[in-house]
Length: 157
Image (cartoon, rainbow, N blue to C red; front, side):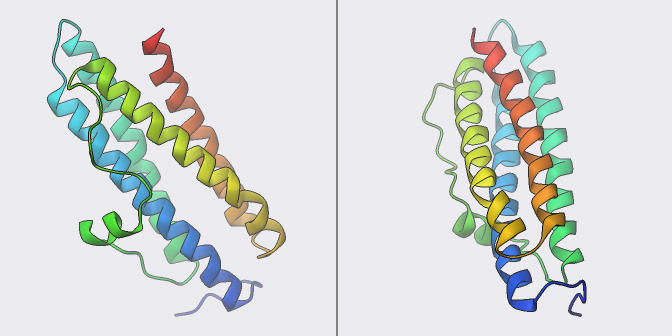
């Protein structure tokens, strides 16, 4: 059922296109963070194991809120791994070592990439597509990812 919320259907469809890419990025990041949680090794294993768990729990919540935002706008969400991999701009490939620092560097790059994509869409969604609600929602996502990126970055110093 289409949402009658004072925004043109064409604009809603364009907003949802952005949100679907965000959802794919978030799901891939969630999976990569889970991989770090499961596979981290080293003398700091226990602390990093718990740290990655906190991160993937936060991302899981983001995944759910993005999917619910898409549904609130009257659209269905992609929900297969194949869909997410086709839509994301992230890669599943692990370029770093299979240790805490390797995982942290990889995840930090992904968070920063997501932050940039979110920022690129905040103003156009508010101004051109007339959806201040989604623009505000995306601004909140930027804040969440900035905090998680900071936490990752702090482990590298």
